[in-house]
Structures are given as C-alpha cells and as structure tokens.
Length: 221
Image 1 (cartoon, rainbow, N blue to C red):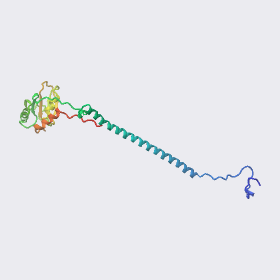
Image 2 (spheres, one colour):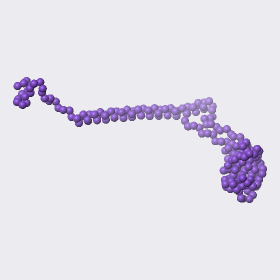
Image 3 (spheres, helix red, strand yellow):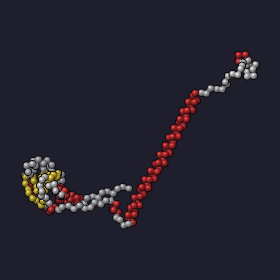
Image 4 (cartoon, rainbow, N blue to C red):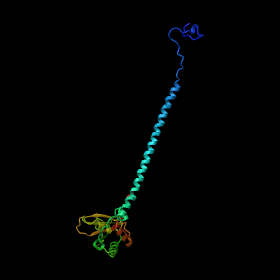
C-alpha cells in the first residue's frame, strides 16, 4: 500500500501514482454574486454621500455670500449719510418737465359727430381753462362722421409732443396724428365716443403728473 493511501482505504480506494483527489470544497457561485452586488451597493452609497456633502458645503457658501451682499447695502447707506448725502440720493430722481402753458396753445375744435353745437360747447370750456381757441365748427369731410373714438389731435410734424400731452389731459383717449400744415395750431376733432371733457380737477392732476414724473424706484440690495 502506498504511503499516500489513508489508513483503511485499500482496494479500489487505493491511491497510486502521483495523482490524488482534491479534498477542498468548491466555491459557491451564489456567494460570489452576493459579494459583487454588495460591493456595487457600497460604492453607490459612498458616491451618494459624497454628493450630499458637496451640496451642503456649496449651499453654505451661497448663504454666506448672500448674507455678505445684504450687509453691503446698509454700509453703503451709512457712507452716504456720513458724507451728508440725502437718503433719497440712491434713487434716480426724475427732473421736472417743462410743459407749455394752456395760453401758449391754440386749438381748433371740430365736431365729427351728429350732435349739434358740440364743438362750440367744448371750445367755450377750453377757453375757460386758459387755452386759445381758434376755429370752431364741423369737421372736414375727411373726418366728418368717421371718428369712432373719443377724438383726434391733429398737428404738424413739427408740433411739440408736449402740446399733444397737455391737450390730452383735457380729453383722455384721444389719438395723435399729423398733416402737412406748417402752423403751430392743433385741431381737436371730437369723435362719436366723446361724452365730456375731464373735470378741471382731473385735468389739473394729470397735468401735474406730466410735469413731475414719479422717480424710478431704487434697486433692491
């Protein structure tokens, strides 16, 4: 019996030669699969945790920057106050606008509606409000019964836009047009939607708003 044959294993279990059976246990494929899946899951968890940490640190940085920016505005305001600058200096103040006075505007009043006497009544009221009233009567054929809106302000291409604006305070909703005239007078052509002029108080308020526009709001910090 060979020395490689364990005791009691004779006969057909006898081991001869240099070859002998391997006694180690085969590795389980299931364990290998579980090990691989566990490694992948661990790597995924590590990556997710790293991303969360990056977001946290970046978020804190943004908050710090926002807080720092918020502190700059009071500091700048304090510096302006120390230099004697008014508190409203930070806002862009709109300068007062120089508007023509009603006595500097000559307006011709024309009636494009079927209502009789409308041009005269409006002309008399505008005269009371300080305007210079020129011609009064029915609208020219090109406009007669053809103005569906409140009215039209008609002037020359050289007419100052401020003249239209001042007249517009007396009659909101008018449109502006130009023709080939060379004079400085302006036509007010009353349309079908006209009911009455603005009240003197409403016209005065609108005129004051034109002369003193609201300043642009200050930018937030």
